[in-house]
Length: 313
Image (tube, rainbow, N blue to C red; front, side, top):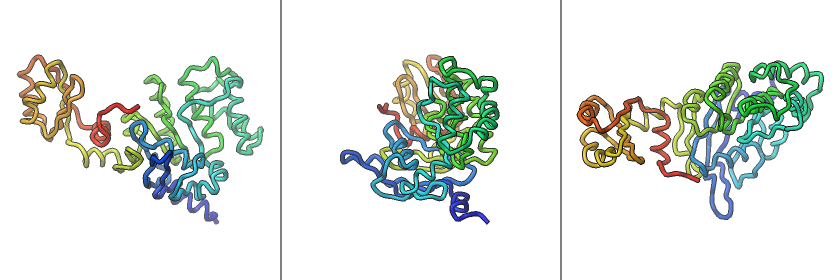
């Protein structure tokens, strides 16, 4: 018979209720609540300063919240954070691999922190390296690995303890498209194998590809959550016509309102949101000085509508 902790973890690998955290009188996490379902990838999106990293740190027991409750793999956090982290794998935002070790040694030493024996780890390391696309690289020193290889090794390291929950903090930042796609393929494989993933990312296409559900945070609060398709259908018109060129802002001010339900201007681009693009495209066909891109609405459109287009530092 499964233990109560195992039953709870199967029911909800991570539950967060009314989480709050302030620094210097400023509330950076303001009543955040969400719950992960077993075997899903759940995304936590938001601009810089939205409160994502503080939320993750609280979930992992690295930061003590002011109030709220967190249950991770069936255990209360921060009270039992150390025990909970034994069953969690983490890919931090910045790689913290040991540069003095080989790829295999990084996995071996890290596995010892979980109390795993060397014989067990040495038997497991070839499969982890193969999973990360690093077969044959076990004896390679970190200094000779590319950025993409190091990122994949960090993912392999997060799996060394066969975790119930993976926490990935911007796992593909700084990678070229080929490396990003390889990591996406590996993460999809993990989801297919039943792993539960909490993902933060600034790449909206990454969130659309991987996340069954997600939340968008801003100013410490969750402002909307649901599946990517649900959020697109609920918050944005179905089509976007992007109009480019020096004349685009002036055209948008003078004429876009006759065709678009909403129009936002950023630099020399006007984003026109429409239910039916045909009349607008026919109009723009008579404006050869303007360049046009017609596409379906996507998660990035939702994100920008909810959080604004202003740059965050």
